[in-house]
Image (cartoon, rainbow, N blue to C red):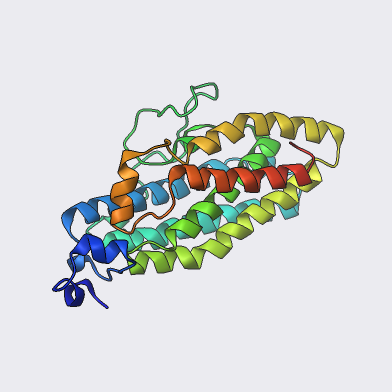
Length: 256
């Protein structure tokens, strides 16, 4: 049912909070529009920044199979950004200019404070401001962030703007496969003692930075997003889901 058909008997926020869906830009009130665009921009910018960073380590891959997997991840993350950007375009975003508007490969220093943001105008998650250091480091980051993306997309596929929810639902299996490719690569790395030691160092670096990508506990904005049907689980709940999944995966690889 469209919001216009329902709004005669129920306020918009109540409609959305009870699972109502919006289906087109002209149905969207200004505050909702702003929060929706912020959510989409964060996803698009993170996908483009992640893709750009991973592209730089393709040639560090130890074999053809690993290079193919890395190239696939770069390609598909860019494609996912394009799909969400197409939805942003319906709200007036300049799709043609967007991809070249920010220095997606730019990074902070490796030892910058966790959660810090480099200067710039893009809205990537803070974890994508940190540089990758070699193949093992990039694979560990891909595994941990891949698990985080799976948790986040499960949440985003339920959002109240139906066209975007459909996009997130469609790309979720491919993002899940990215994490699986990372696990396959990491399994080969930890087969040697040297590889396991390097992987543990990378886990120690990336684990807190991926955790920070879930945002602050007790976020004041969460209640607004929940009323709009743009979020359902709190930052703390999503973080716990990821922590549990990461713990299980690291234990299976003897990396806890």
